[in-house]
Structures are given as C-alpha cells and as structure tokens.
Length: 233
Image (cartoon, rainbow, N blue to C red; front, side, top):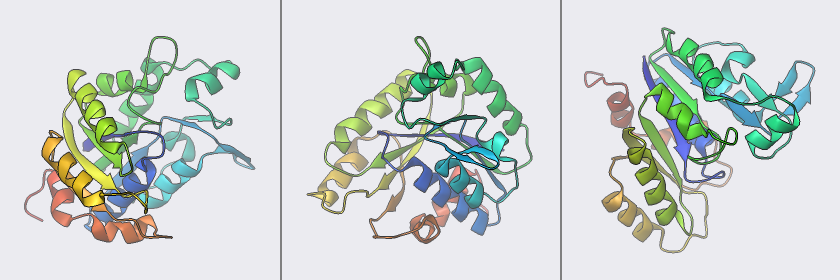
C-alpha cells in the first residue's frame, strides 16, 4: 500500500478537498483507497457521537468501507487548536498513540492511504510534540497542498523546507486556487513551480460551488499512477 501524509500551507489551504479529490480520482482509476484523519477539532454532536465534516468527507470519497472511529479516532468538539481542545477535555495527545492508529491502517490491503494532518506542518499535539513528529514517526512521503492566495509562496517554501529538514520526502504539491480574487495567480504558480523542490501534481482551479467530484477532473491520471507507483495503467 502506498501511504502519503497530507499537509497544507495553513488551516484553510484545502487539505480535505484535495485529499477527497485524489481519493475519488484514484477510485475512478480502479484503485482501492482509504483515508485517515487522526485528530479533528470542530466536531458536532450527533446520535452516533462526535463527527467531523472533514472526516465524513474523506469517508465519502474513499472506495473502501471503514468505521468512523478508524478514520477519525480523536474527535474534539471545540473548533480550536487540537492540543488546546484535547487539554481542556483531559485527553493528552501523543505521537505514539496516533502512530498506533495509523500503523494499523497501513497494514490494510488497499492501494492508497492518505493520512491528513490538521492545519499546517507544525500544529502542536502538546508542549513538546507536533503533527510533524507524527509524520516523521510514520516515515512516509508528504504531499503539500498550497492554498493559492496572497502570501502562499512564502508559506509553501517554508513548509517544504521544514519537511525536507525533518528528513521526509516531499512527493509533490497541489495548487488549490482558493481565492478567486488573487492577483497575479499565474505568476505565483510559475514561481512556485520553479522554486518548490517537488513536482506539481495537479492544479485545482477555483470554481464557485465546485465539488471534489468535479475537481477530480483536474487531477491528471498520470499523476495518480505516479503516486501509486504504477506506470502500466
């Protein structure tokens, strides 16, 4: 199984949207897909328990069936930083615990597993650990979602530098056009393409009301096959 850790330039970069897009596209191409969001804040109380919109989106987009708790084992109600929400609930977060959840899924029989972080690369889990430490412990390549807006170049370059400094492979990046009023979009895209030390996997345009199912039309088949290590399909 190919596993990738999905991170973003910041909280609103569109990690879940891009993850769902990639999962859906891979499923269309005949791959079996799974997703995992180890920690999610901003969950709502339901009859089944706490549920997070990002996690339910991933469940809808992936091809294989899993219980909600396997996809999102740590669900926190307040829409605040996860380590603060967890501390208020008396539920300390740790890399070792989250690593165990993820490793269990990595033993599955799907073709692709996406593990989605929360916020950006260095979101804290506690006073000493961050989600980057989880990615480091898993030793899997990283896909960076760049929210295309003013300031994205600096955020993307700093994040890419941090990923590589932490000893992980930046497998590629996705340009997700989140600001329809962004000035000099093409110039920014060109600069990122020249300066980021990884291939541009897909460019997701801004389309008002667009769904991840529609966005999958903009994720090249070749990029998906490349990520899955399959050049024959």
